[in-house]
Length: 426
Ligand SMILES: *[C@@H]1O[C@H](CO)[C@@H](O)[C@H](O)[C@H]1NC(C)=O
Ligand SMILES: *[C@@H]1O[C@H](CO)[C@@H](O)[C@H](O)[C@H]1NC(C)=O
Ligand SMILES: *[C@@H]1O[C@H](CO)[C@@H](O)[C@H](O)[C@H]1NC(C)=O
Image (cartoon, rainbow, N blue to C red; front, side, top):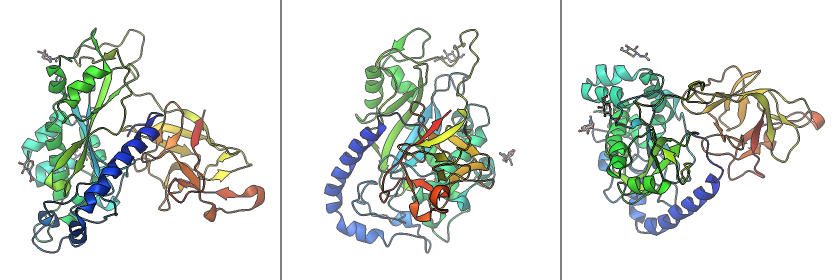
């Protein structure tokens, strides 16, 4: 995903407080449903668990007690984002259509999981949709509206499933009936459901109805776009993002979900993020009309940040090449590289960096850059992961002594003593 603007922490805690506030009230009314949920977990026979989900099941993110491993309650990723691109340079997809970016499960507090289960990863979407499920209609839609900016659409589909689809817990194969499950049905469903939800939100038409149409000289205000989109989204704020030229670039529709994602019972909720677009002067650039000003090389994505050090807020020293904190030694050089679909890769002389099963940063030659995407706040240069920008020392697992002590750094959690920010310094 995208690096968050500096104000996000505040806006999220406010939003989260609101969500949890209403949640307590809701869950009090459903004690029995929660009891019975535990029974509805994994497939046993001919009835898929999600086919027996209670109709009055609480909506995702409205529980006060954790419910895990249910096929009827999406958790922890109870917020589903339907995301769309406006790729005007190079122009991608039909000139009167926002293209589909993805269907993303976010946690209720706005953080998110990614690449959740290697055993579910897929290698070829075309084979599944076209050869195994013979759905030419769905496949044509994917080709038409689920577009990668570099033309390699299948790469984007694979990435979207492996990064986000594997995190949708109510679409796991074991939430289907043992007897009737067809191999890769869960994958097919992910793509079908993603397209179905996308088709509910023809953003181009929503905007056009309010007179907001692509133009090389007209600009629009934040309020105009806000109103045009929220009036089509149950009065809920829709997130829209601008690129560095103040031009409209992405649209995100936020939802909760009742029951299994398979049941497609999505509930519209207000965006948990504030737009980064200016109050006035927002451009909506035509796909068929844009020419970059002469002399400016066409670079839709800024490259990575090159080489530098990773420093820790309020501490001396920095990270060394294995990803651990070393207070006195020489800093290791790290590269922050833009990865293919929006995130960033960290790399030291030992190899790419990722998180191990204890959520510690590790860098070595066995880490695949496709599996670990960090985030970078472009203004503060802080490094994050999965929507979290707080890190902490894993002092329990430090090794060496005195001046030679090395301390693992792990992703922030509730049991952190003090939270640290990691900052890239070129
Ligand atoms: C899209 O392209 C078609 C054919 O070139 C053109 O007729 C139409 O006006 C264009 N629409 C927009 C919104 O640019
Ligand atoms: C997926 O399979 C199709 C058909 O079997 C093939 O043409 C295509 O190259 C494969 N794509 C990838 C990314 O392997
Ligand atoms: C795919 O979605 C469509 C709705 O557009 C639905 O009619 C169809 O049943 C879905 N396919 C499957 C196999 O669920």
